[in-house]
Length: 171
Image 1 (cartoon, rainbow, N blue to C red):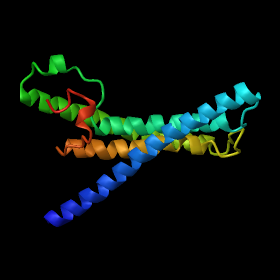
Image 2: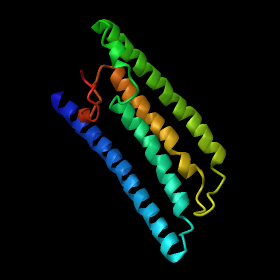
Image 3: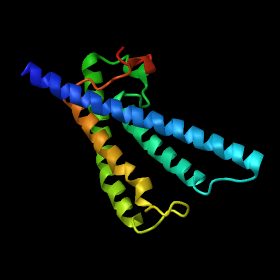
Image 4: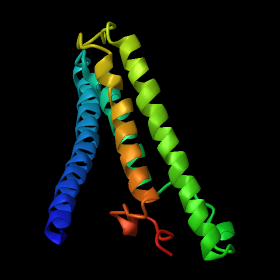
């Protein structure tokens, strides 16, 4: 049983790492495109027709993946000054309410994100000609990740991967 648990955990850690690498790659690519756009505009008085559209696409995707990663690492807004005054049992319940709220938000993203993708799927982005669904499919995908992390947190499984990002995590 321990071997199965370790194998499953290793798979999930690889998936999470791939998501993080993908998110960071999007920021790097977005930065590169914007830099290229500024240089070509200022120096050559020319811009690539697709640069703004791709930059916006990357920004949307990075932002939504950041939401899921933030929920996973519990980087949401917290009022520790108040919560630390409560007994541990009250904080345990507050953690469950937060996880349940996160779960409901994830379900909302899945449902209404998918509905939105269906509404815009026949529209095309001007510069690339891609379906507008490409830009917004990240909404239900973020919902799936958020639901997954919320369920793990409701089960009492620690999902925080980067404790160094928030000095208040784990205190």
